[in-house]
Image 1 (cartoon, rainbow, N blue to C red):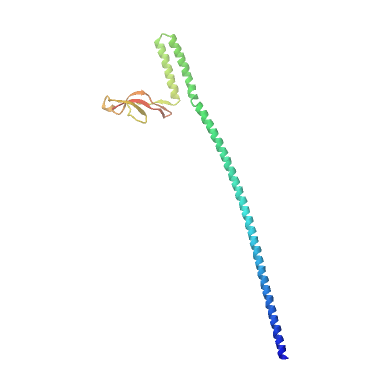
Image 2 (cartoon, rainbow, N blue to C red; image 1 turned 30 degrees about the vertical axis):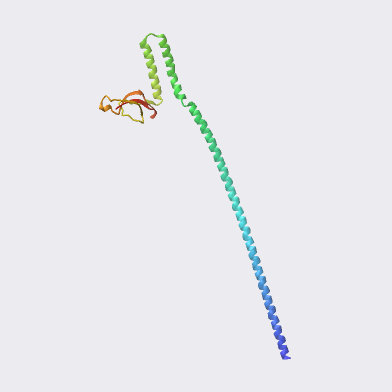
Length: 204
């Protein structure tokens, strides 16, 4: 009897241990499942946060791109307007560039008309000559007032930047070799800028 009771007690203890181990295993499995669920939920929250942040960043970049595009289009339009305005002003300037000089020469033209009539009606050569000289002097004075200056070339050393040699002739003396002996057409400056080379004869 005692042995049977002992065996029963052992069996009961074994069953109790097995039940305890089973309960512990279930608890561990449940705990693992809970941890897995928490991990999954945490990952989902992280993904949602990252997606929201990416959407905000994309929206911000799109807004910046739209702003840059708008500025670019405005600049292109402004440049196009500037180019058209500049072309129009340049055309107008080209058409009216000589207006001031021509206007100032009209008085000289009036004097040439009067001198021409005087030459037709007067037999006094001295009077006619005086009238013509007045016209010439007025023309020179008007052009000089606009910045025209005659180049002094005779007896100057030949300079290819200023002179155009028409021909060379023997120099009358050694000092005139390589210098301008005579002038066919004078050179001119306009406001100190060369506008016509002098055509000259050079000694050799």
